[in-house]
Length: 328
Length: 311
Image (cartoon, each protein chain N blue to C red):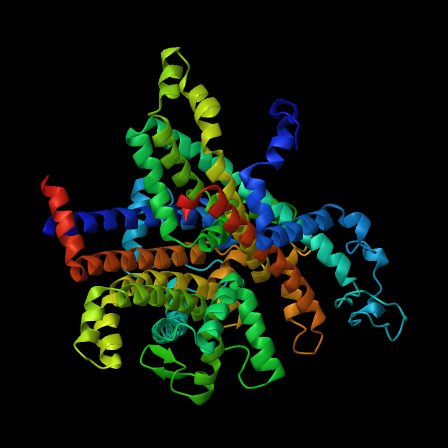
């Protein structure tokens, strides 16, 4: 057990260093940093001074190590476009993205589980057919079209909800939140639906198929035979046994939510890191791209690690199976 | 009916195969196949079908801007089947040309992904050892990240490497490379699996006995045996690639304004839903949707029919 966890940790560190290597290569070799920072009127002496200050004369491995060290201490260089430190840009915009991701993840998980249970218990109901067909269409539609459709219906035609931005925000310490004002709450509804819809349908279908499988098993028949009320059979016994795969999938989907936030943020002009990344791609702002890759890459790798470890912790069968595999 | 087998020819045998039988029995497959064929023909012959050339600035009349579908323009009296956009461009023509860009990028990207994936898959499966470990580890790491994110990153890096005045000109090529490189893993994994099974079979052993080289065995003898799964994955990947292209173009980091794809048209249309010009958004969206959906359904059907195990 300890061996597996250690093995997994070492693996994670290696992958993280690889991600850092890719992001360092982008930072160092795509476009000339000196050209980009100084512009065309710079003198040779200026260029020489900057090259020395950035340490571009050192060997590549040295530069890589310094890049990793800087990143660890929160220094991601300076944006070519706005000349602000990238770390400050990210710190300013990260709360917006995290709030959006959190709200849509909670929505996807709660609604996904509720709808999943409902469609598994009432297999022939009208609402079940509606949800199953709706989820099929939801999965086939490209995400950005869903967003545009939401804006069209709820912002333009019905005029119920705002179509862009975060609404009013409140500063609490270093965190600027939109969840405490009514305009902020209204603004987050449509983007959260767009971002969470795919994950919701995924979780709903997963919960439904797991529930159906569990409900067929003998121990459920036995709880029924014991005369337990239907509610206790469904929620006390069946649901508990469906949640392990749901946790894994939900955890892994958290990464996709962060990545797909790029699309949502662009559609709704949500001032988060995704919008920052798209603008960086558009204007070829290399340090911002490299920092975003490093940030999101780290997040992905860590999420994967946590899900893997959770899997070990939750399901004793995997734990034992792995142990046997190693002792052989 | 009574023609002996040897006189039927390849095509005749194909028409009597289980594959065609299953196809005839599936309305979903027939309909989506027809839609895909129709859209491909429309894209190929866009220049002949389209009433106007939407990229010929001389033929555009700004007075025709925002003409609703099937209605006469209030200034010029001209009528357009699907209406016009802000520049007075005939939307029907723009969609046909946009469809061509979308399909071209999608098919080329899948071609690239397939070439890379199949080659690496064959090499990994046949050689085994550290080559296999290296290739599959890279694949493992890549699938951790959503492919759209990887495509965006490759697109951004390529833009950084290209001189600014060439960026629009090369945008389509860059888009193909970005999407192609983000979708190769599925090909490599499947081909590797099949290759590992195939390489233990006697015909490969026989090939080695008579002194055939590794490359010859892989390309000429193992490759034909992995074609079935490749066809299935190509179709499913095509749907993904078309949506990826549309997404990137919609976000403004894809097809250039001079060569708008369906995604670009939707991006333009999105600006006008606030002022009530719904058709500029609706018709490109419907076209994209029918294309992506029918390719997807066709892929699902192919998977179930050709190789139920891939499910």
